[in-house]
Length: 212
Image 1 (cartoon, rainbow, N blue to C red):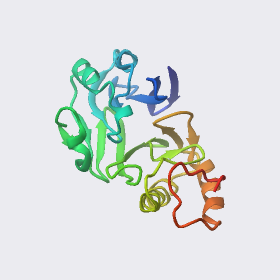
Image 2: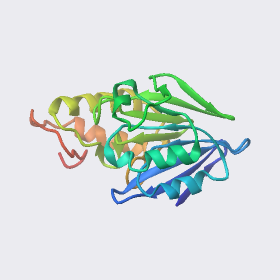
Image 3: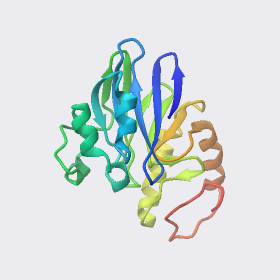
């Protein structure tokens, strides 16, 4: 488990499962209230990370299988309401408690998270922003966007990233759904190079900023 601290929020990053996922516990350092982001395999790791806090909700960035392997076990252990985008609520193994809506805010103690709808990887993909901490799910990774199935999906995810994520301060830390962190500044520089190039009409899949 990796622990990141900033004065206004405590972030537990928990590597989980056989798909290389990250789960997160975001904690108010004053009240010890928290929320959980995603529910991958090896749920006991996330449950342990959240154990010393009062979990107020569970947020699902999107409903691909690897982010939900531990869903029922984590939900039962933490006994907290679950939020997901309305377009993907039927993909859960049991009903969600509330819908995540673009522009809404979620408050835990003194910590406020803004909800960002960033479709492309999936129709209901969500990111969450607290100050200079961005939880990007599978929308943005070091080196490129999340995997897309069609050129239209790639166009959609690039619009999401450029309009909602790359406008953030360059020192914003990006915590993705898999792998290492990055920063908005690094993504801005690499995306500028990608956007300056000509790309084939059928481009989609695993796209790298500097490799295409």
